[in-house]
Length: 110
Length: 129
Image 1 (cartoon, helix red, strand yellow):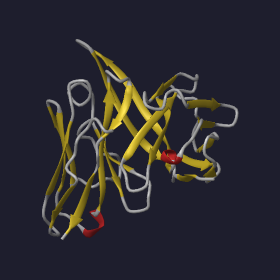
Image 2: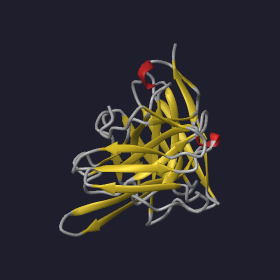
Image 3: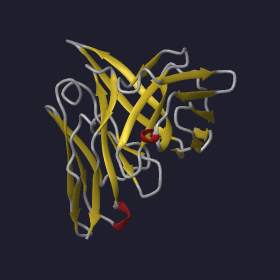
Image 4: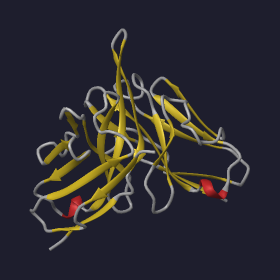
């Protein structure tokens, strides 16, 4: 049972923008840094964003992250067919002393 | 480049113990910066955090599995392991190992930097007789 809530799916046409929300609480997103992961079909997750908004080397700036209060958002601009994947937010929960993931969002390029 | 090679059986019988190992290459498991973690994903489901272990053996475990999970580190082999006892069909999943960045910041209250930046390819484990 995930403690972080994401919309099940989002979709947009190629070249457009999508945003994915991740809602938590003061014990996780409200107090700790958020990361985002992309999971292409049949593959392991890949780190997209860490520390709320930082991108690892090799991740294009089409991907962006932000955090406000107890929510975080992943943005993808210039949507491409290769962006079709499941996306997960993650963070540390200070009350649980455990890592937590979001419920996951499937991105579909129309 | 850090690589994480997973090994272990793909089929485990109910009530038995699942054992997986992750061997790290291209870097040392003895790190003051990183933990080493396990995550699983049941068929068609989302990611589920299992736990993290430091090279010294210090661990964090998910409360829901805590009584059945044992994690260990073998620094001589540059590997870490997961054991999950008394498995049932509900433990059928793809199991991933990962390198974990976990840092505690101290301010008005503690806050955490936390992310997984290198992942293994995953091991599909089926619990069935």
